[in-house]
Length: 614
Image (cartoon, rainbow, N blue to C red; front, side):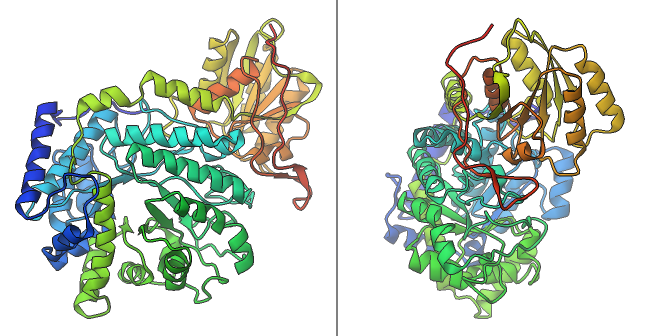
């Protein structure tokens, strides 16, 4: 759940916003820079760069986190966190001290309580920057992938995640997602989204990508990536394809370790490169790097983020990409294993990066880049090339012309009924029916009136209003059943299993949510003991569809690809027979006893006759 308070931040009126915007345009015009159109010509941007100090140039390269719901008056706990981690009290102080070119929003940093507050925060950040001498608009970004990664929650519209979209196989739906999601982000002052994920997930053990990927077929992934990019372009928000050169075939999480991709150059060209080529062809505004090593592309042992052969040799020169390149977070372990935090930003710039995202120690990183230029390791011309790309993007997004947003735009755009209906409509095409022995689904309101919903309640992403068991039970109740929820967790104890079994005996059917089931998981024991009661059991894999391989005894198994509200409601409609299942597996499911063999192939998905049972 999200706190919907806005603190002490006053909401600007439309007149105030328009007046402030006019003032910014006038100030830029007074210095010889008129931005009547969204796209400024390079000559004027270069002239603007020439007026910047070296310190201002270095600041433009950084995109930083900051705690607080307000740019000038955050809560005391957020002030304390900012002082500890950044050495400033507020977002306004961050902008003034380091002249950062971008700020990234996180829910855990209390930046995204609710849409009106987000708009106020965005306006406050822009004002703090534009009030400075030679002030420039700030490019505000976030990770709004949808599905299990969403930094802005309800009442904003939340869509199914990438693998669910992959199961729906509709480029139109991907394009609609980008268009609506982008419009809502833009209304809140967020102009850069770190989405879509362009990784081809071919490793079922992948701990960090998984359902964040559209699937395992590079051509299908490429088509959906390009479609989503087109949607974002239409909305006026910069999309970001990630994680170059490809993070789909690893069993190591780059947040906590240093993955190595062993693909040959030929395999990389046929698999990993395909969606990135499609994104570039679609006009992608930014591409995010991966903190992993691909020896076939660069055998130096450096992560791709710090690899000139990969970022300049392949991405810039071979693929012809001249947009903004942004690192993944520089606080992740994958980029910190070989070099210190002072060297990482310098080496990233030498490799070809433009934006340095979220360094663990901004002061150290900022000073390291400054020193590298003063000592001649980096040239000022090299910085200017990246700043030009960044300013081109800001101009193309209209930030020089209209850096502020209005609350009326939030009201007209964010979480409106038409957008919510589109999200539900798209979700209805994604739920995948993997098993349906004996035609157990759809359940009947006459024969299965009382339903017990049990299972895992993992930490809720922003797209949820409560524990998945509760959301699913409420959705089934709204469809005419009497459903009760009992959370059993991801590792149910013997006592918890016993409670679930006892409750199942009083139900007509059981729906159990499974979450990343492994060979030794006690979730398997839970499901088997529920089956032993003789009650019909329907399982829903609420994250990875691979769960079904561990539970072959289940007679009806669905994949929702996430436990967000929009996907759980769609699963409930399939269970109740209100919606015919249409999703097709976008990844193959290997056998549990022999992972080299396929249990369910890519494209598998059952349905049942288009009729409603009672």
